[in-house]
Length: 293
Image 1: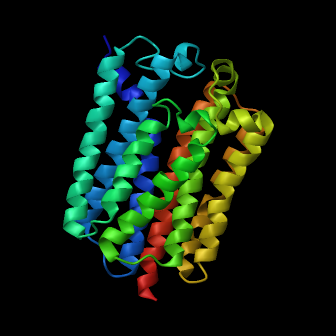
Image 2 (image 1 turned 90 degrees about the vertical axis):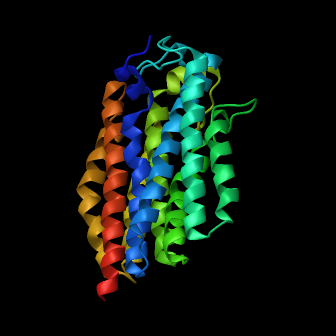
């Protein structure tokens, strides 16, 4: 029987900062536009966190029943590790996604942005379809596409729109930056699993690219967001705060390019999630301070 610690591990707490980052950034941009709403920001954070947990449990269930997690280099999963029954993990995933849907419905009702319901439905379908269904897109090398769209662009810009009803290009640049770091989070996880994923037919982007090119792609994914922040500084000079992250980016790049594997990549996974959160906070603060002129 799974313990509380097992369930917390199954929720993959290392990935949760990545769920908060776009909400912080979108809210910071709303502050800069003079239209921030603490209530709507909290609702958006609730949606992001519950959907992230739902995705994690859904992946645990789907990979477990497919046998993908039978051989792992990372921590054992709930389903694949036999810690909880597949049905129990599936119910946990559905519950988390349902809570996210309910919070999203409240956010849409409060903001009046009813058109976002369609995107919400797509987001939940994407959460399940990543490793679930007959043709999971995560097994076709498209996982990063889904992450970029839903945990980057949609999460950031949706947060901003429900508060300000406006999407300046600086917010798009920031949303792309957050999305790229979220993709890097997935990439480093999949670099670690290249040997086992190849054996079970899980064709991630990392498997398609191979180890070396995947590591180079990871570096690009964490470096380009800093460039996007600098571009945003042409309008909001305070966006240059993202340059504080350069030493962090260099350190992570050196570790990954140095051939880190196994548990060393688990540390990189954690630090990449924190990097994304720091990026959201710093760029969000920069966009917020733009209101000062």
